[in-house]
Image (cartoon, rainbow, N blue to C red; front, side):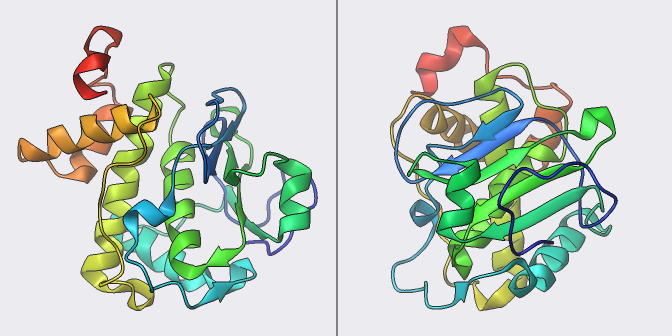
Length: 229
C-alpha cells in the first residue's frame, strides 16, 4: 500500500500487485475508457451506501490496509497478491494522474505482462474508499475482457461479492452501511449491473458470476444489450 503517488509509478517489487489494464471510477457520467489505463467515470459508491454512514475519513492507505487484506482473504482464502500496489491520494496528487473531476478511482492492469498492477483511489470516507477499491480490484485481478460491457459486468460482480463479504463479516463495522441499487442510466454501468442482478435472480451468487465472466462461460453479447438497458 502507498499513501501518496504524484505520478504513475514504474513496476517494483514492493507493495501489493496483480492484473489487467487501465480502469477508473467516478462521480459523474462521461465517456468510458478501456485502454491500458481504466478511468471509471460511472461507478458511484454512494449508490451502494446508506446516508449518514460516512464519518471516518481515509487519508492514507495504511488506514484501510487491514480491512482490504481481511476482505480479500475471506473472499479468496489467500493473501492479497503482492503484485498489486494500492495508493490513496489527496486531491492534488490524484488529479496529476486523473485530471477529470469526476474520476475517483483508477487502475492499471499490468498482470498479463508479469508486472506490477496499480490502483489509485482519491481519499474520501471509509465506505466510499473501500467500495471504490473493491470495484477497481474487480478490474485488475484478471485479464481485461475485450468487450467493455463484459469487463464492467465482471467488475460489478466482483464488487457485489466484495460488498457481501464486508456485510457478512462486518468489516470495518460497515455491515449496516451497504445497500445495492441500480447505478445511473449511462449505457454501460446500468447495463452491466442489470445483467448481474438478472443473473442473481436465477439463483447464482455474485462470486460464481464473477468466475463465469472471467472464464467467459457467460458473456453480455451486443445483440442482447438492449435487454438490460
